[in-house]
Length: 533
Image (cartoon, rainbow, N blue to C red):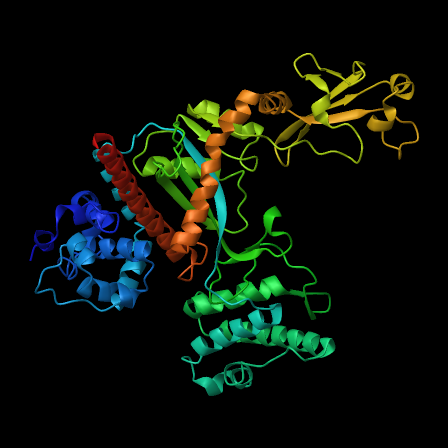
């Protein structure tokens, strides 16, 4: 049945149904072009897949666009005319079970095809002339909350033990794992809120001893059990939470490192924080977002013409400094050419990043953070440094007397250490702002990195009015984060694990691009109609 036959042309061009029409006419053919790659996810011996993978990808895109759970998404395939129009569902469609979507997402993660929807959407935009391959981009990161409960260290240890013992019960039955099975599996839901601190510490140490004994017993079963996911997770949590001291005694670690397991139900989720969150932090992942940065200034009420070209889901503790290159690579893997210019904030910029961008043929635009200051002392930005001539000039105009080149082999970094004469510093009227009060014989020293001149050049450039006006093109990425968070619930992960969370992010961004495209086309059509009238 051709549903569009019963719908008027005005209705097909409305903002409510335009995304579904664009999917049918543009995006679905782009996904169809990758059918051979999608069919390769299934075993060739058993023939072609029973359920069309192109259809399932379409369901996942529309599901994220409408913010529906799996069961309601399948219901929409039955009763929503827009879905039937977009997916080409016939009258004799037999339907599918919602669990099919669960297994299909797992298959996409296994074969590393999470970006198939986003790439197909960008291909459709380029084919329609809406998106250019060569363009400027803007990049920024946001945080994603994991689909888990917050646990204390004691709760995490006990729950990890419970999951491992539940798995190990298949080897000899629950009686073979006593008394741990009855202690953690049958009575695992204990409330420690009103328990004294001394008892909590004793319970934690007891759980550590039980962990050690269980791990020792698994050594006799075989390598297959040791490598099993619940047992490997048990070993990891034990190493993170406990340490063996002299005399073979066990004690709880006083401090834990970053990247530890916060909840055994999602070991990939990590705790991290940033300046805007203070000490609160979050448990989950970090998401890098890259979108095009249009040059034209939008009119009031004009929808954006920017398209998100890449998203990258990372562990929460990943720094933005090392994320710029992977994001650019993901941008190119989705069919886009190398960007002409990349806008980013100070978290991404450094001297190596500026040189890498220059070597790769694009301009990296953004500020560099202020130099570290020691109290009221002058920072390195007020000194005029000439590294080739090994000279530096202080704020009062005095030249440095010494310059030493220092290379730290462990971290592969080179520094230059400049020093001024003590007689010049003692008589200087600015010594109160320049010298440290802790030194007995004060004279100023300055330690700078090898690429200091590159950094200082960018700092001076950021002070100009023209550069500050140019940086306004980066500000649009903040609105994109708000749109994804408020409109598509991207802040909260639906699934557990880094791979499945990445699938959610990729399909959410594909849905966002589809709706943006439709809203933009509807707005342009209204402008044409108003101009004619």
